[in-house]
Image 1 (cartoon, one colour):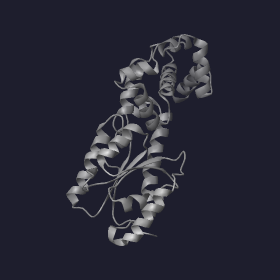
Image 2: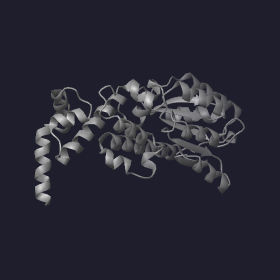
Image 3: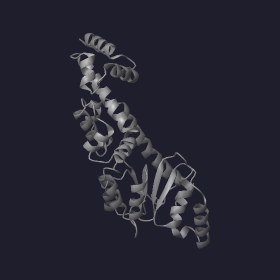
Image 4: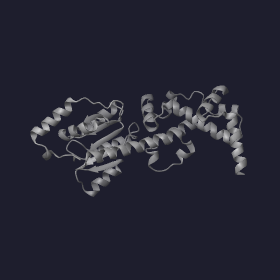
Length: 289
């Protein structure tokens, strides 16, 4: 296992050779998660790029200002940054990421030489998802990154499949910045609107359509249109389970103008026709009582 090095670990010739070797090699992790490395030490940046690029697509920044520009122009899945150097204010960058609606879903992992406890606490309070002290092994770094990304995928799967009532009642880090909670509230407030399009949803969320698309996609791995449709079907299932409304009424209540389209979509998602869903809900009620 090799430890992440400091400048003294390599001679000048070794640093130059390593930098040239890594700089000349193209990124090969097509379709892999996109990692933004923020590091002002060229040798460390080159080394991390070399070790990680077989598993990830790597974007590189040597200052937090450059990192902000890259974030604005690319879809980033995780930020790996120094916490504090001459050119990098990692805490400020992390705060910017976590308080900006467009980026707040992006995990941030801090890298740092040994720091006073108060600096570590400040870093974590800024919203960082992990804090790694140097020196560390590449294996340890990769394990931390995989863990953060894996947990993010679990959250995506949860939002894609859970009932809305389960999601909005969840507390803690799963809600992250509250974006999904706000999104569901907006959708449900307009659930009966027949013209609830992605453009209209973006307007109601006070963001551009591209920003909404990227935000929803990275939170849930769904498109905004899929979120609208799934929300309608989830709400329809709740209404049908109440056994107070007909299928036609429920279809209208969730914004469908044609009942046959509603029945088709409901059956495709739940594997059962709305009318049979009501029957099943009644049987469950009878058994429970």
